[in-house]
Amino acid sequence: MLTPTLTVTNLPVFATHNTGTQDFTVLATTDLGLVGAYVVTMTSSVTFYDDFTMTTQTTLTASYTFTIFMTPCVIYTYTDTVTVGTLTYFIGDPTLTDGPYEFT
Image (cartoon, rainbow, N blue to C red; front, side):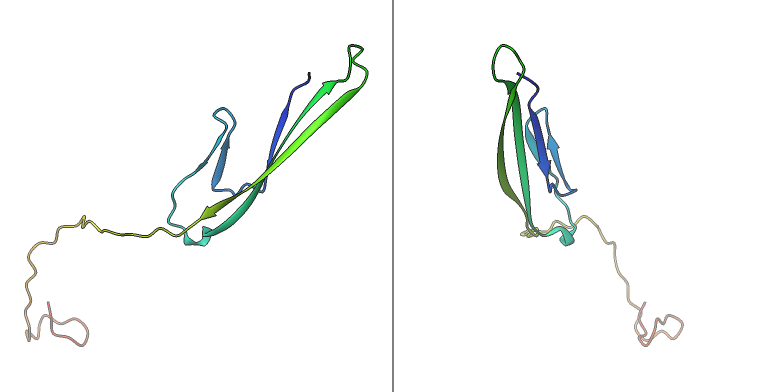
């Protein structure tokens, strides 16, 4: 028997095929431009000799198509990570203006 082959076609750039573990990795992203469906095809083939003379070979091929769905992330909770100190307003002070408002 000769070496089998595996070909993955149409794999999007954000997905990685891990041949050692025989799986795929799709990392989380905030890029909403990637939202969509991506059809990927895996084709494997193996070639073997027909008899002991090793003069003729037969190749068997099988394909499997699957879809990677990238969906937008939904945020259910938000944890504030910034602490704001005391805010002081000076309303009406002519030396402390910003734009059309007289606030500091």
